[in-house]
Image (tube, one colour):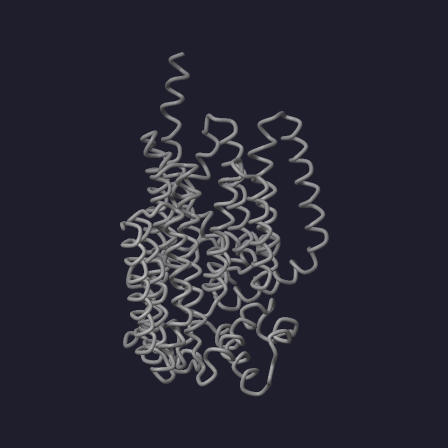
Length: 522
């Protein structure tokens, strides 16, 4: 009797949510409301059934249910808000914003998919094998073509792709939860999953038909498979291979990186603890593989870097000025470091909006993009000190097996952040977009760092936060003086950097006072 009651409760909840989501979609998106309702229901119903199954499998926790609901609702809610607010509060001369699109590539990709459906009688097979002008990998455009042709042929409802992506992102949470909780405990699982659910850039890039929410969901499954690799090795490898194949239509680069982190994870967890031969053999093999990859991909990567650096310099006069001061040989390094600060919180916080400025002339943005920019930048700057602290703290782990695994993950995150910054320079969109793809790893590392600090009552975390406070304070002053017409005294850029480095060095040095005292006493 109790089983039947639970089943009926699940069915009723799924039906209510399906009706609610479909009604919201019908009210706030384009197209005939009735058709939009049934189109949304056709996507929502199977996704909600999968969500209920995944939630039960992960332990049926109330906290997890709330996380999954908020992860989905915030992503969908922001997307629907953007569609309705952009035409009013976006840039008046941007056609894509008039149509409710956050990103230019999403607009162009969607337009191509709709044109194919309208003008061609394309088959399911042909949509898989053809090349698309606005999609490097083809998977998202092919999916859009299918959805438009089979469930939305009467109107260009790009919100159905967004709806599906938001469901996939939320469906990743039970896997992330189970992987983190089973391996690192409840507190790490709580912090990591809340970070995944609420991270602003993840919400931002899910507010349009983009690949990031799909990749986030898939990579959560990969993370769970790796976290439980010791318990079921063959099963985990099978799941990771399937996930890599699923990533290919969205990004072959992510699929390759996924295989790479899998190899390094298994090496760190299963082989390094056996002997030093495995450690040094793996390091040598890693060095050879990286060197080979660099030599093979260098021409393409150089073209990317040169283009991105050139674009960054053209988009910002002061970046071009700074690059000129430090010399061309350091331009890539500077742009990569500059990219780590994106989106820059002090910059967007003081950036002027009408009527204080003119959109057609000089530095200026709209109220929509200012609010969104502050939201995104605040999320990154909240995460950064915990992330950097965790990376720094991996060297202090006592358990050898755990230490090897965490160091490998820390190196992976550092490399991925650096590559993202280098690949997209100081770009406000592509740089954080590449970064957020591996959000499960960022959330995990930050959560582990917070847990490590709480267990040890470690003041090093406070020091990292203090360093960021100095960074924000000095650069807020610098940006404000820049955009306020020098209403307050403006320090030169390099003088500001020098002050930040001096204050950071002093804060960092305080961490070595106690260890030095103890050594002197001995």
